[in-house]
Image (cartoon, rainbow, N blue to C red; front, top):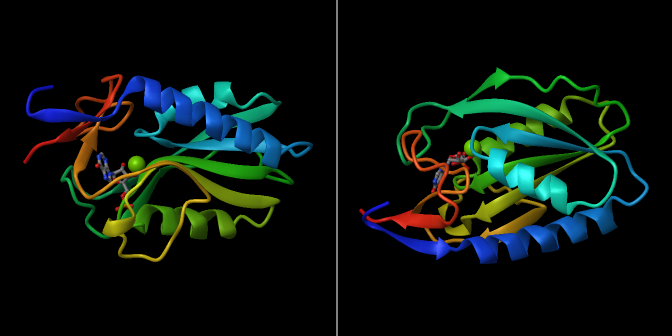
Length: 173
Ligand code: IMP
Ligand code: MG
């Protein structure tokens, strides 16, 4: 992609994903782990993370949308697809691409908190943009901290493009 620079290359991503996988395996040992990927952005991260967690687990997906295709989220989150697996007694780990304003993660926490069957709910985000936060939420696991620039690649899009780039790049304004 032109007008962009690599921020996290594929080796750095692989290293962080492997470390997260080991940490998650240790933390969830002996528990029923259910990964729930947030479509579309998390699909590549989830695919790699799931293979880095060396234990029995289940995988499902949720799709949410914040209105618009713009680089900034607009303030309202809409549920597009519910998870389909039974959550009863499961330890849910929601796998998200980026925590930006925090709106989506706050919404996801409320959504799963209302599903009382789950034994626990935590969030694993590939990228945490702390300085952009407008809602006070934290990811329980984060791959990388990033500044405010707009990122594409490794599942992250700009108007639906560039998800297939193997490295994560910052789009220059
Ligand atoms: P939030 O609700 O503002 O935290 O942002 C949530 C969603 O916006 C994330 O799940 C991403 O899908 C998208 N998003 C935020 N920042 C970026 C970015 O830099 N690149 C691509 N998508 C982003
Ligand atoms: Mg997303």
